Length: 249
Length: 312
Image 1 (cartoon, helix red, strand yellow):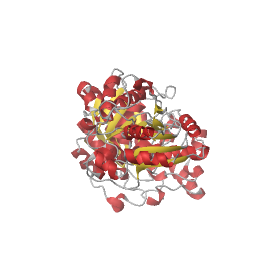
Image 2 (cartoon, rainbow over the protein chains, first blue to last red):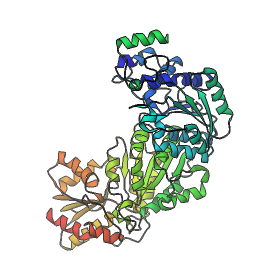
Image 3 (cartoon, each protein chain N blue to C red):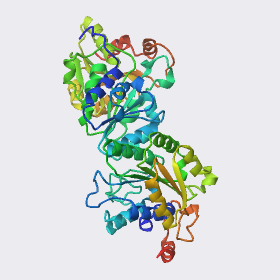
Image 4 (cartoon, rainbow over the protein chains, first blue to last red):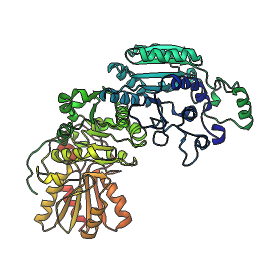
């Protein structure tokens, strides 16, 4: 997808994909035949640059087909550069500007409570994204309003656009900080599927809002992309694609 | 239309409208601490289960509204006009861009907000929201029109920004005449063939008073309350430009990007008519009484009167 488009964000897609697979495989109540059902669970991909990971899972669940993925980032494609609810069935948030998704999730979680609907809202944040002040406005509001139908997954891949997070502006012990804002927090290895599935279920069973801090590796699964800031927002060339596919498949 | 009766501030009209809309269960009110000022507190008192208080956090408020809207709710979110601006990018990217419909109300707009000083006097809000695709932008002139126009937002297909004013000003409308108002349609208050004065908000009353001065000298002015700045009523602008010899626009807002700009942008492509823009001339305000401040920046009956005479 990214190679064909000549642009995109492979690193943050690969760090998040195990978490997304775990979430869709065990929790998400969705139906491609009824994408607008008021009962559907919401997945709010706040780090919207990891759109290839979302499009890949939506293809698995029949919201998209291969030709949609092939159009990624091209004019008129349902697969926009950043995930966009206006364009894509199965996408419930228009991302691209970091820091906004958790607030949006508070809105959907409130709507569920007001309508007595039992759908869940899952929000994925990037770790660099937590540098945005709005994230902390939202964390404070969600615990104050005790939104137990709201779940956050933080993809702690330690790299942002320009460099490592601790070089740009270290966010420190993000789990402790979120906990201090009144959330239940669990830290896991974001590439250990059993730990992911357990944590998601823990989040469902925990009262009050809960957050999973998932320690991940940017570019996971491709040796030359792993922990490499230069693959935050760069498409692989022909050779790199070939090498990556050999490692992944 | 002379000696209008004393009424409320347009923010009071907003508060009253929320109460009238409450029977629709889709309506949700969102606050960022200033509900007592914006008058959403009236709704909160009666419908706490449909009021969400988010503290002093405007960026969060806008996206919470967007999330609610995505689930079929009709959120009305309010704070001071100036503080909505802090969440401009949230309104642009998080609300309007995905095509979600929520309604933002910014109270205490304009320099006439007064003694709080320049930090609270939004003079650019109408300009910035006008640039967002699909956004409806309104600024009612009294409490009754604020109520009617806010009520019409219930079935409005676009996200909106409505500026209301802090201070009580004389009523422009009666309980009866206000019923004719429609979002997107300018309201003609007096008719005359010599010159047109198009005004918004607290300046509509001053425009009417200027028209009286002109009339005493045999000059007949049309006065329009252009409560909807976007979409601007182009049909009315066409009619006016074919009737009068010049147009004065009057707003308690920067001359850059607001009502005067909206009128000029349209008519510069369709008509050779001369337009004189009265507004805040690219400067900040300061603390002072409302009337003192309006006079300081040239937003007076006299300046409207004088401008109109230059266009004959």
